[in-house]
Image 1 (cartoon, rainbow, N blue to C red):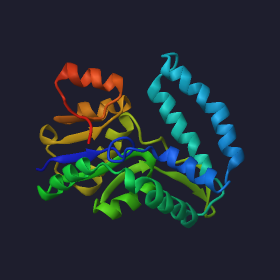
Image 2 (image 1 turned 45 degrees about the horizontal axis):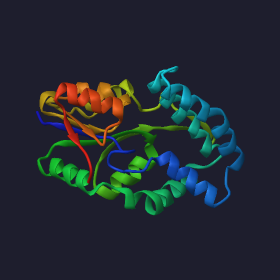
Image 3 (image 1 turned 180 degrees about the vertical axis):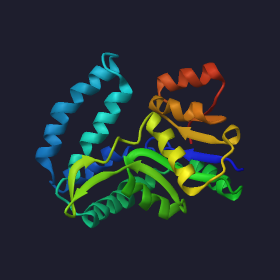
Image 4 (image 1 turned 135 degrees about the vertical axis):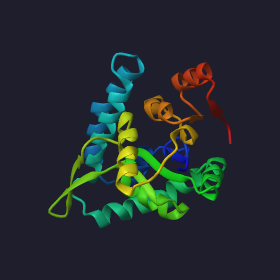
Length: 226
């Protein structure tokens, strides 16, 4: 058996959030302006509800990500990959946390099973995984019909307990032998609490306020400031 090391992307391995980088990309090119306007009009008020405790924050984040898939509606997979490749190269690569990337490489050197698991789009995770040499990636998948994106996601967004379920599915599918007490999870978000509780070595990276409090209470490792 071997240890597994699960890394979140947004706000963890990469300081920037993918959805912000995608909005920036589309605004620069004056693309999807109606979608972006409607999304902001309908979703930013929900953000305030979640932050004020009037709506479950995990449910809010799942809805945000699932609805944000609409930015790709009508596009072919190759077109989406081209956009994500440009976003990765121009917006995200310079935001990679060198210290976390070094930690990931250390896990690889120990022959640990490294998994990128994130709420962001799986096609982007594949591109990122290819760049840094990570085989296993789990993210939110968009739906295609007749070769074009419907703007919906397949199943649920890869967030909260869905991350644990997806990793368990991967372990079973690949026949991996994982030692959970020796395994690690790295993330910044309170929504990833199920993942952090699932492994023996939870690590909070630049954690949000709620996660910071839990990490301190439980004596978890906290990484701050590169």
